[in-house]
Figure 1 (cartoon, one colour):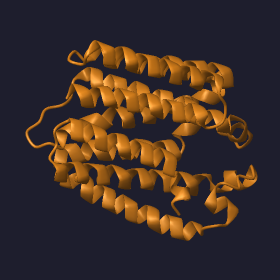
Figure 2: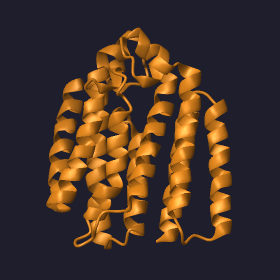
Figure 3: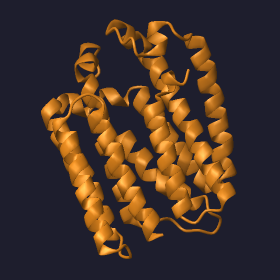
Figure 4: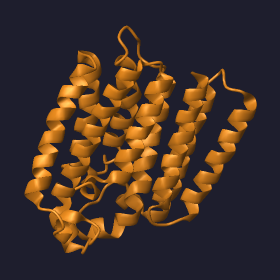
Amino acid sequence: MLRSAHPGPTLAVTSLTAAYAASAGLAPGRVVLVTTAVLAGQLSIGWCNDLVDADRDRTTGRSDKPIASGEVEARDVRIACGVAVVVTVVLSLACGLVAGLVHLVCVAAGWAYDLGVKATVWSWVPYAVAFGGLPLFITLSDPGAGPPPLWVLAAAALLGVGAHLVNVLPDLADDEATGVRGLGHRLGARVTQVAAVVVLGAATAVMTLGITDVPGWLLVAALLVVTGLACLALVSRGRVPFRAAIGIAAVDVLLLVVSG
């Protein structure tokens, strides 16, 4: 069941949420609430993805997909997904009406991707909306707090688009064989890989330009790490580019944490 929920991306997004929430000054209880809401939302998106893709995964022989391989029953995943949706709604609204609605839009974007947007040229939009909206949700969850700076939202949205591009790379051939043609499929593998690195680099550039109270040596170190990860994403194959993208996101969040 956990593997069916795409544990890698789920854990990455949830961990980055917790780090950003703590850096934003939320009370410990509020950090737990926000992080749990995001975890529930990510679980629902992951389970939805596997349910929708089950037939395609069987067609392409994806033995790593629990539903397609018969390791779990689709009915059980459907029930878990439904429970996760209910928990997501309850926990999101517990963070405040406006904040909760923002998070539900983020989750809805993930579901929209799963349910068909990923097969269109607009496949990048749900990632931009979901990642870009996440800092807004976290900040608004703090009673009395205003929205974060626009550059934070822009950097997060760019990270989302970059993550999308590297995430589809390993599955381009299988997706095309089953009729899925998102932006990455239309661009082709090499152009998509280069575009992902450019977008991820742009996210870090926006982040470093926006932050004003981080020591210079730390900015230089962060840029060196990001450059190394970008190069890794550019030359590697499989899931390595996606892991590199998550690493870049972690560096960006670290800069926000240090800047307070």
